[in-house]
Length: 213
Length: 138
Image (tube, rainbow over all chains, first blue to last red):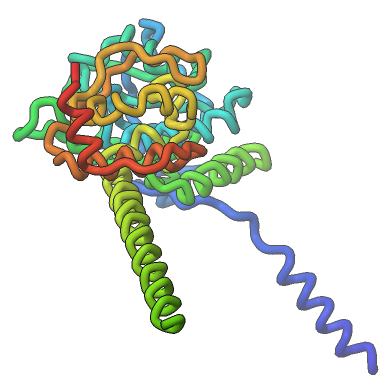
């Protein structure tokens, strides 16, 4: 009987140590749909997903959603001549790149919001100078409306040309984490090294979610 | 008489000391103000530790470059730069935007800060130095 207390304590300790596996939330809009499974009507949730897209990368190669199928990826919006938040964002993104560049399940996708100036050759120069090789990190150019549309509607990142200054763009420095099912799983302030560290570890959490299934 | 002499020597020493530290305090003020202007105008690209970014933006840690180009830094800040620079044996050819809105004293503060940070120890720099350097911009 005198060991009973000790037993309770160690049991409690044991239970509290086996935490449920950490899962990232699913972000964005969602709607319930009714569907029939085995003759029964069940309610399922449809989450917001990234629609198909088609852009041109720094190697002048077409890049579409198919290149991101089965990948966990991080998306952001920038332009190469930006001297405000973009250098900070990509200084931080470079850490994510170095961490995962040899992992074929992870990709990075930076959209230029300055389609006129950031031609593929300009993006190539930028990627080279940043020290980025291969196609793990894609820098893409696309039609203005397509880029701005996917930013606002799909990745929920606000971007706009500054009407006062033609060389300037107002945009947010979010890094958006997308899972293998094209759902939004996290948004991180790309200018904050702490949040980017969180992103780096959340990518691993997300990969583990797929590995343990 | 002895007392008066020693007292005046003492006073003289105090004044000398006070004058010297006035100059020091002034330089420290340049440095501290320079740090905050650097954070607003330069740090995004050149980094909080002057580390630069890849081969896009040059680091400010090349002490040899800083020493030999000290008199040109004010002009580079004020008017930007279009020419390729060799820093740490690497070529940087990007454009640096002009900060033409900065006053001479603000530029002096930035130069004072960056030439005495990130491993650089190039000593005093004030608004008179900046005004002189800015007259010779090419």
